[in-house]
Length: 323
Image 1 (cartoon, rainbow, N blue to C red):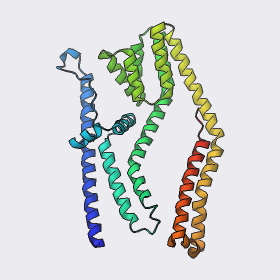
Image 2: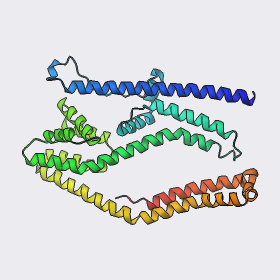
Image 3: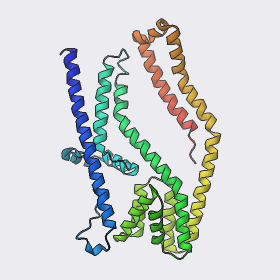
Image 4: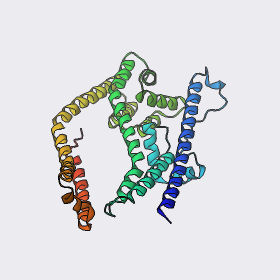
């Protein structure tokens, strides 16, 4: 097989897989919009008796392709990524992310065939390209959960004020669902819908914890469950939790300020080898070229990258302070 034939075959395969990914993405977005419209129309109904049937069963769509959905539904790791996707609230399903990762891995592998690098380093770009869509998903999830955590103190204060005014706890949840923006408003709205469907309070709050990865929310859920069993002033408890969370945010800000110097030092140490290598390459290309053109040089580069990866993990653990 000639190089031209190999390039044409890989191009056709890449375009076909990309076509499947785009189709899967468009179908998932269309289904997502239809679900949102149906949900909004359902809330505008005057009474629930007018509806013929209401289903509260959860449906997870791993892919628009039936056989791929069936396959992923049987895998435990696919369920974990589906939970992360729900927490990130993205329209792309797991099947589409796998297709995008596969396309990126194939293209990276194809490009690395023309690169004069160590054979040990050739699979690295393909692995990174395959993981890139899932890294983006984790980034979206962390960003949304951080926004939820920032909104939590205000939501707890709103519930506490509603309880002090004489309203029921569910009414406080309704105020948060109606007045707070995404992500905390829609998440509390789902909890309120579950309560309206007859799910027990502790089960609905447990489902909220399952949907939201927020440590501070656990204090709120545990406090509500204990108060329902033993009694007490729930308004004061919720207000104290809100103040505790807000003070923790202030302390976290001070810690971030004090650790900024350490983070900058870690970034400089990680960028220093690449910067020096680039400067030496422009000053004396023949001297630096020995690392690329000889087997011994490529072996040294491979070991250097492995040691830098280990050092990056160690520096990350040193500069990360959990509050």
